[in-house]
Image 1: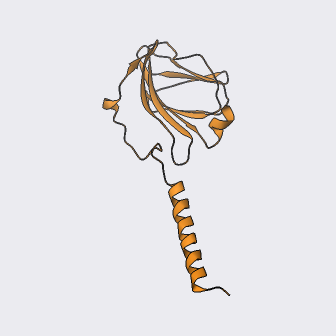
Image 2 (image 1 turned 60 degrees about the vertical axis):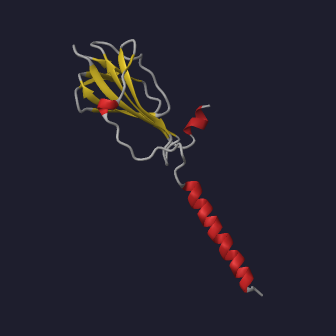
Image 3 (image 1 turned 120 degrees about the vertical axis):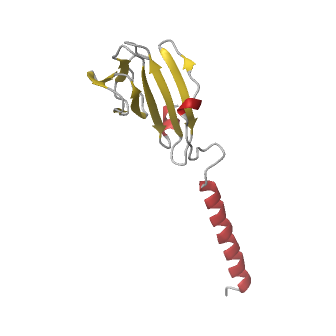
Length: 150
């Protein structure tokens, strides 16, 4: 026979379990929260081909890693050689003219254009203009992808 004491113990155990699960699923101290990034406050670090502004590199509630940075490349230069990687990325052209190479095909785009780089596909960007070009790179690693890469 189930007693009132049994019901009380079961209720306390259930509540404790629910609170523990809710706490475990809540964002941790290192998890990115909603934020605003003011362009005028981003510090530019010089690179061999222009400059780079680190914006964020942190886990989120749904991603193991989420990064954003802005790259400015001098006229007719590329920040690096074409490459491939398992994470996907989104590039938004802020200013200038960019030549996007994807799997051997090139497309020239300007400000406001959006470029998506799929997982493990060869890609590269080059400034195709006579003035500096700036683009913003957004990359993400879904749960388990970082562990698989190690």
